[in-house]
Amino acid sequence: MASEVYQAIAESLLTEVADPRLKHARLARVVMTADLGIARLYFYLIEGNTPKNIQAADKALRRAAGFLKRIMNNTVQMKFTPDIEIYFEDIP
Image (cartoon, rainbow, N blue to C red; front, side):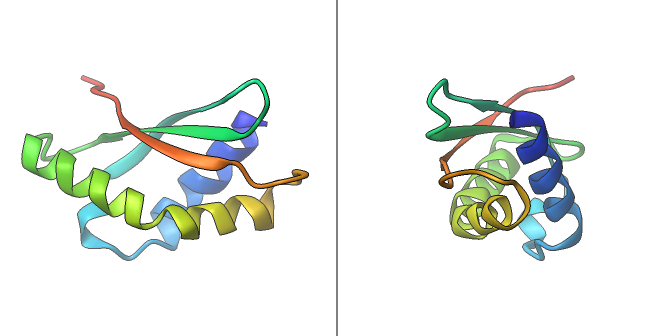
């Protein structure tokens, strides 16, 4: 399930999200809770890895959470759409 959510959201971040604060944001991984009620999205920045840019990308992803939930609902077959939690992952 997590891999399907990852694929759907990672693709939409590259092709459908127009927020310039997410220009360098990429999805690192998705972790689902055991009850599938929460999807934890871990992101990283491919460029401009400064606290200011990280905070801006985090804020933009949180604002896009509703859109990302719709992406999950429309592309991944689930009984219900999980809530989304956003985390930054520092990948060297």
